[in-house]
Amino acid sequence: MKKNKFVGRLILPVLYAPIGFFNYLATFDGAYTNVDLLWGGVIAVVLGVAIFMYFPIAQKIDHFSPAWFFVLLIFLGLLGLGWVLSSTHFPLPYTAWGNYAFSFAVLIPVIHQLFHYAYRCQKGSFFKRVRLKPTDDAQA
Image (cartoon, rainbow, N blue to C red; front, top):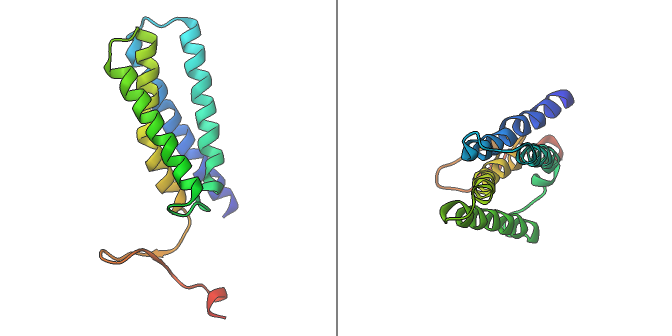
């Protein structure tokens, strides 16, 4: 079971980190330099490690806690910065970084929701909030 959790934690960074990197490179349309490629790769690796390390933290974050507002602030900051840089007439490298920030900002809520409810038994209801199934420890 512990090995499955490790593999599950590893799958998302391997899938999500390259998405922003490929959007970054696609913006250049083949006109990127080696430095642009290096910085894009470094940021993709850093984001992959950050996603991997976020898993244990995400399960502890409750809605409307200070940590939840901090993640929301990061999301809104990246979304705003990415939208401004990618939608105005900045030079090509700035537009590429704007697309990179925007694509990662869009993935932050998805990553948080996937990690927040991973490996929890839940019984869902359409009209009520999600309630956890009782465990043997809780009944004793």
